[in-house]
Length: 498
Ligand code: NAD
Image (cartoon, rainbow, N blue to C red):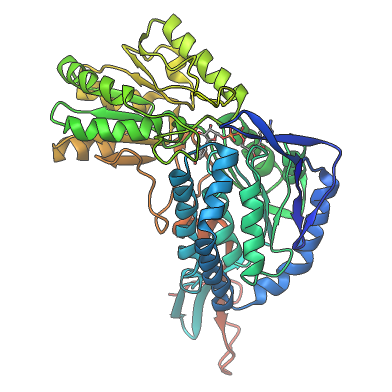
């Protein structure tokens, strides 16, 4: 059995009595064991980071950027291996795994421009002989805690900018698919990153708690489910850390009567069922406006959903693969039962789906409910599986209200040909990321990503200019130089530039 070790000070580090199983979700079998670390293991990583970080911070930003350039080339050269490794532990199909790596790489590309992003502000002559300027300095040792569903993209979203800014970064990836994060750290070393600047510690709550409690870790970026996000936000900020914590989601796709329904069906199939619905920017709720729209959409959706091909992650023809674990499969199937019990019309039932030759794989067939009501628990909660719920709205106003009143506020999309309706919707909806005829509105790397309400705790978003702000502190300098004209006048009055 393969063991997945921590990656500390540029080397694999094996420790810990506790281990976790890493599955191959397509087969339902255990393929590796991952170490579950302790506070002592974290201490080892912090010691290496403490040693390495000052010199890294003092390295000029252009040289730090060159490591990012080389890393980008290495990831591209290793794309196929990374995608296969990722798919084998996560279960998503290989083409989608390549996308996972690529969307992370785009933040590395942004990080290649760090010399420019880190430039401060300067005012010459803010007062007589006085200049004011600012500089962005790294925080020191920082950490990231990531979910299973994007094991390449989300770590890169965090460590790219954090490291480019001059920090030492400790990553605690999901224990369910931990191999790719370790591989990325190895490639960073190969790209020229000094040992101790990017380290990987594995584990569960015990390791996360050690990170929250460690006094030398100054910032935590978290992505995962909302209750854990809130726990980390509360625990980290109570200890004076800077924390951004992104949580779960229940994204709605609003379909106006004038929408291009063929486009909607195509987009919805991908956004609701792609990656088996295990995306925080999936579209698991569709809200057609008016019964005529709903009926027409339903008629087109049913054959499109029935035509979806579920397969093992290496099946190049498959639209999506298995879900991540047996426990998650059971959870999704419970939600399907719950929604049916609550009165939803189960139009397509994906339970009891088996794939010939892979009977133990964690597969869930595509599932479609109509006539779902906002009062259902299965609507209020995140299912995170290949389940699409249709909630019929009577009016545009109701369609704006549904996502706005939902406790999650990650993403939302509106499908329409009416520019005015789209504009109104984007301005009024109480959700952090909006797509207009774009089903998965994940902003590009040089913009920023972040949901609202229970989808995001903290004030600074992920990547782009906000990422640079999150991973640095801003120092403000006011300077003057003696010119022999000092009189001592006004020294006891608060200085003004008047
Ligand atoms: P999760 O919350 O179970 O795990 C995330 C991380 O927290 C993992 O590293 C895990 O080891 C750790 N963790 C788990 N339980 C813990 C506990 N009790 N105490 C401390 N740490 C704990 O999430 P997941 O199942 O890996 O990922 C899916 C979730 O992530 C979904 O809710 C999804 O919507 C969300 N997500 C959100 C975004 C976003 O940007 N908003 C992006 C991707 C995923």
